[in-house]
Length: 577
View 1 (cartoon, one colour):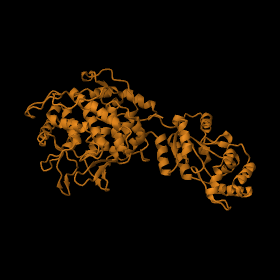
View 2 (tube, one colour; view 1 turned 45 degrees about the vertical axis):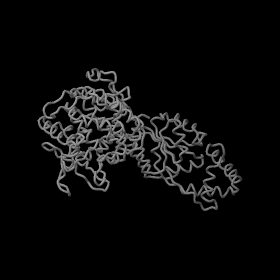
View 3 (cartoon, one colour; view 1 turned 90 degrees about the vertical axis):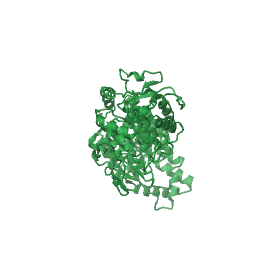
View 4 (cartoon, one colour; view 1 turned 60 degrees about the vertical axis):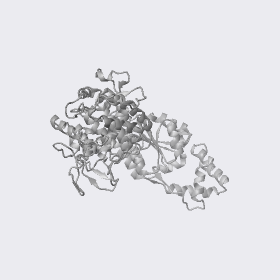
């Protein structure tokens, strides 16, 4: 099953899934012994229709030293105890209704012919099932793969678009061995979420989640406090390009993390991180932007690395903040103003210093994600030569590593930027989607002093939605490429094109070792005197818009209803359905 494929068929086990029963009987046969009988070769032969009921009870009586009459009574008691799980059956009916009646639902059970005749008399909504396959009729039982193949052949279903649910792990394993998607029935809520994720369009469901909560995508702390911030609002806007979803307080010049900078400890200073994100996303007037860029250059530490706050009383640095400031500067052709900051970012990437997160960012993926975002902001060949191949290596190291939904979404998106189609993490991410269409919160930032973590379900959901779109690919390459990409080590990634940005991918690591050679133009003595000649990629939006027809055609091939928002300006890490 590919990421773009929606399952159109369900095959459900009956006993201990759709129906519950009790092994406690009115006889001397204990529950443990009754289950042993059910797992005996004699009973298996009976379920396959090769023994009649009378002969089965006789053989079981001999094998277990029991009176056949008592065995008969025990199984009659078990049959009497069977009850349909009407909640689960109603859920299946809901799924079918949401599919417009297109979802096909079957049942598949290891059951003898006599027991099946009794089962059909039970009060249940049997009309939901297109057909019920029994081991007695098939002459085979689970986990024999011949039974699964029989069901697939008779139903005419494709295993790649079919989900099988059973309470026994060995039956699930066998189902997967014939190509079925399969779920172990161990927790009803988990199974319902998994089924919805298999049969529902993840991006469409995510968009509904985002739209239903438009303007209310507030951040929260891991202590349960709501945070009214600008920061995640800006990032949600960047990811979706939908201003109706967010609510931020736009300043005249510098941005503050909080909408209201007056906090319990006093006035919280504006910071370079939120300001860089804000100015990248909102495209302010050039004179205001130039003024802020120049002011940022005044806030550098003794190593000439940009700090986090516009406040000399808080002389703190963070590599993710540095990356975001670099993104703003490179997008404006001023990357060479921050040579030492770039050296620092390169060394953090080279030595994997980000692995346990940073002072203000919880996840290792945050550094990698925003570094990929930096590369998307410019065609500067020296920057790409220095960071690109090394970022490829670091991302390849993390593919398949455990992580929460935010980490996986960031990883998939960052991989796509450099031409890695991370289907492994995208598949895990898809199954993390919750029933309401959103993804779990994902702890993103943290307070540098207290360690309290901050997350935002809206942001995690927006990135996860984009990641699933981007991970599928590929798209045809644009007809023409900017000259900056026509170098031996650069090509255009079709997966990255799904972000609606023209982004390079790097075909030949290893990366260059850090040196003092003039990889980047040295910073001028006066950073305020002139702008240097790093050209911003001004044609990104035009190229992105020209790709819309192809993208929508790709979306349509997935039987999805939605649209990709037309961008105004560069749309970084954005692929809205």
